[in-house]
Amino acid sequence: MTDYLVLSLVLLGVLLLGGLGLVVPKLRRRSLPPEPEVDVRTEEEVAGPPVRAPEAERAPTGTLPPPVVEEPWVEAPPVERPEPTAGRLVRLRNRLSRSQSVFGKGLLGLLSRDRLDEDTWEEIEDSLISADVGVDATREIVDRLRERTRVLGTREVTELRDLLADELVTALDPTLDRSLKAARHDGVPGVVLVVGVNGAGKTTTCGKIARVLVADGRSVLLGAADTFRAAAADQLETWGARVGAETVRGPEAADPASVAFDAVRRGIETEVDTVLIDTAGRLQNKVGLMDELGKVKRVVEKHGPIDETLLILDATTGQNGLEQARVFTEAVNVTGVALTKLDGTAKGGIVIAVQRKLGIPVKLVGLGEGKDDLAPFEPRQFVDALLGADQFGADA
Image (tube, rainbow, N blue to C red):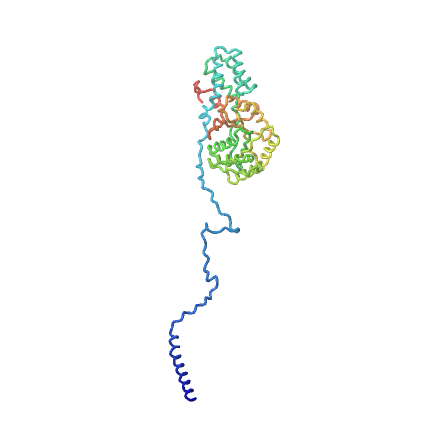
């Protein structure tokens, strides 16, 4: 019985082993999921190259420079070539219409009376004085005119006009040198210093002087030494750009003498013919401002002497202009006068008064608001314009 039990257990174990041998191969034949691969790359390799965001989407950082703002493109104005100034006063003489009413119509009307008695000669004197000729000059003109009229016994209007014209031209002293000393010499530019009181139209006239010089064939550089008005340098630069002239300027409230010095130095470097220096307008009774003008002159003269100092006078100021001219002459040795606003006043005789009182020739006259209404002064042409030459058959 025991043997039978052992045999049964043996058979049962064989059967179990055989069954296991059949089941295990089948399980091995089933597809197992692949084992995951191990990524051995670094984090930088996995991330790849950085992707740059568009400029507009990038977050600004404190280390980035500020964005560049491009200035709007502005087209430079075309360079103008003014016509030569020869004969300009003749072309502009109709601008003296108000002064013509005093001289041409008023004086000639008095001289053409049937009888030239004392009352008539006194009226002639009053007319000349009211035209700012000045008392001393008026007496000389009238005395000479009375004598010549009496000796010649002339009664014709044209002859009387010629006599009056001769006396006025003589009073203007045609022998004075009225040329602008603005030519290059000894390897340096001619230096022209422009001075004047507030409100005389100094900066505008300075720009017109530049046009006169360019019209006559000179190259010009402008010095904006009026540093008290922010708009003055801009205004002068605009005038210069129109004729292709460079402008040297400094910061607002800079030392005017320093700007003037730099302008002349730049003129020497660029070999221009003329350096034209605009100074700040000032009142002739302000001692400090006049001293400063003297400093500008001294500093500029470190480069060499100033060739021309032009005083800008407003013709409408009349006899007050004489005091202005005297004080400026003492400060900077004025060599010539540019008389502005002569078209808007009946005071054309101020030209005679300035010259007789100060011995300073009027070299330029302003006869309007146009850019080329500044004309070289010529006594005979000026007198003919005052007397209305065409009306009396005389040539201007």
